[in-house]
Image 1 (tube, rainbow over the protein chains, first blue to last red):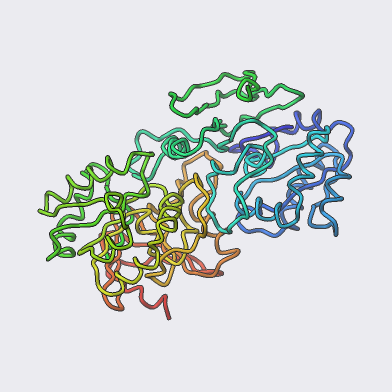
Image 2: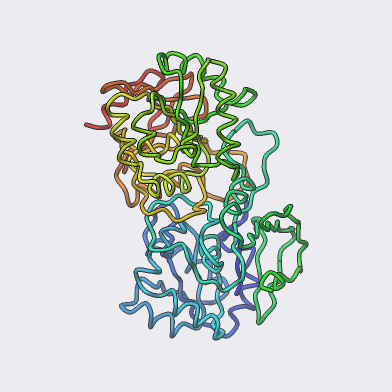
Length: 233
Length: 233
């Protein structure tokens, strides 16, 4: 799995910074199955798939949207490679449950189908979606997600702006609130960072450190190339 | 009702900017019933109540926390004035349902008990909590809230920072995603603004404009002293 904080970094095209990595990750897959359920900004499944298709065309992959299939479960079973895009995590999780594809997703990824997630599509690889930044625009049947990594993610992790006069909660405060009720570790993944998960290793990639939050502990900065597998032990 | 975007504005003490308003609003109530369920930053009910107690002491009101009562429903029925503080909206709503006080809150406020909400405590006066900024740290039985005003709120409303290199969604994008699935109007209430609800009028107070989002319409800026009652028609 490639689990990216964001699809897009500032000043660059959609998925552009990841394309060299994706070329290796999806080596041998001509066609990528795209899960467009998160619908960023409310765009349609078709429009979202078109954006993704243009990006993958640059590394000679074709793309099909999961919404184009009559049987989503079967489509996931047959996929050579899977990408779940960002948008709204509540919507994504609701749709995954409604289309009954949570379990099959876990199964195929565990069996080796290469997976890419960005933002909401990364969030769902964690234990629960409870550290998303998104608005609860729809009520999902559960907050439980794929559990393909042994912790939770906070994508688009943002350090507090010490100059700000805004009194809304910082990201760190929100994660502290999560830890008042939940003991899973939370990894704050900054834009431009991603995790490369292969077998039992979970490597932090990109140039930035990531911020690890454990219940009742001070947050820690983890350097690139750290293996996060220890969080599952 | 006084429905405030934030308890605290930058550079000022807890509730300080609102005290002159609250002195009038809670005229005749010596004791305020405080609902501490939202627990900002995960602090305890007792600690939160202590903070609120100090603020209200400045206008000679005593404060009791709802958690101090064996029967929360009865405490709300008997309250002379009610304040629900900010924190995490998911937690607040979960606790309100678990303690079975949603209905009684609607009843007493409709019957004239003066109510103050800030942030999460304001959010719940709307139709649903679906335009909160908070993290889903706990799974509430429902997103439905008090419905004391005929629209939804987004407290701590924040304009997009056009200089930012951050690629996470702006507040406006998030509200647009809400409107892909829901047709309730959403009022983005900036810090320092509040609503004064009395009878059938819903006046915007403070020095700032508020941003109104309607489904399939361009957002509008509403000037202070606008009556928002038209949103219920």
